Image (cartoon, protein in one colour):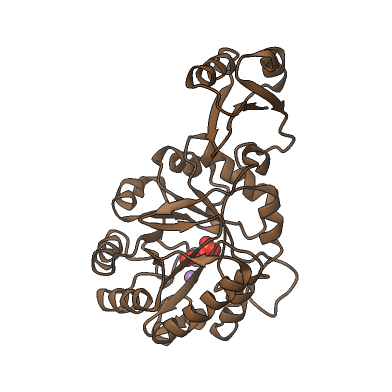
Length: 341
Ligand code: PEP
Ligand code: MN
């Protein structure tokens, strides 16, 4: 249930509603918009209804949230999209995030060369995995802590905020030292204990859609993070499993308008993993921008043919500036602006 406060409701009136909601064992989540404050009550709906909050001072009206996800629901924030601010770069509400970098951190030379090119070419954030979820246990699993150090060096040199994946809660403290955004990989979307820890950690999260997860399951996964008090969640469509075998995954671009109708959270697209080959990546990137995505996370490498991981799909960093200029052009048509510091 959501309690919409009157315009100009006082702090004391808001605190009183929160206290009443909590008195029946529900948790209260406050969302302050420009004009209105909304208090989401999560828990037993009947108990909240019995409180009779309609007549309470400062309360305008109550709205039941019909969806199983509450805090992620568009109903919870009817007035605006969530806008994340990450080291001066914005994502959401017309601000576009251009996240680029290699699939994985391989070496100092590779990471720094790729980082320099994407920074010079107009990326707004730098990606790179130090912990890699690989299908085969015999494949390269990432440089781990050594990779995190190289990411820190790349951040120091380029000033770009870092997006990197956390696979295991036991590495959370190390990842928190470096990551401006923590990526949850597709294979971990339903690792609920990991999501709860990330909700508590408070760092922005990029949550990737599971290989066979529905839109609702993705939103429910985001709810695990939001429920712990972390509001900085971005959702990422990265391609799903279908009967189609002509490419790695089916990039579900309809997830963009569908998610934007259902949630206020920013929607990012990974245009790299579904095609699985670099010559289709730009088309999917531009299509994502045109369809209203709030950002893309694209794999870019200084020498893609020699990449240890996902060699076929990474874009060469030498051409990143031209790619980036075309993203800017389509963003303008779609009504968004790439948010650089
Ligand atoms: C990645 O982005 O490096 C990655 C492993 O992606 P996904 O979890 O979507 O497969
Ligand atoms: Mn990859």
